[in-house]
Length: 281
Image (cartoon, rainbow, N blue to C red; front, side):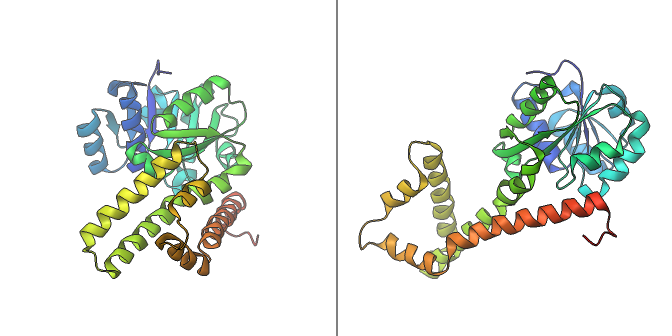
């Protein structure tokens, strides 16, 4: 699905840049159709030079010329962004928010009466290399055409799925925070290699390729991860000795607990945003 009009971004940080890169690469829009508002002259220069898109210091032109607007700002400033833009927002606007933890109720409340439609998205940082995982939740009045536009954007930087908003905290705990768990595991693999005598560059190269190859093998989808693990695990061999140590440290339980803890924290942050910082909840 291509864009017939102009596509706007409020915020020109790394995630916005990833989306712009994906959109242009997929042929969804041409550079001349994309407008970006960001107060940083440095970010404006980067986006202009690298992608030939139009950039602005304030959001007025974006709201005026674009019917589809992606809110790519930090959660703590999204309220002020919507408040300052409120009078420029109208019924033809489709607003897509990637601000982590900000519920649709808060987003829709900030523009109540303006008639626009809202979609909330939880992407993750691998979108920077066009390998992201995103979940989208539609707000009130969002049409199937609106969802087609939004999913085309996030499919351009990886894969996406549409879920009810009640699942987005779980998405945050798994794929939103998940890259940090994977990077920590990679660091541990590298350190393990160094501990047993490998030079750090060698350990890093082997660890990265091992993780990449394992992921690609799992993504073939013909075997369950447990079956793939069993393929590597010979009776009385080296792998079962290593796995035994992981189980002694409750490795799988720790990963599961990490996802659950991040999910619970996402719920807490969402409640704080919805009820205000003075809430005792």
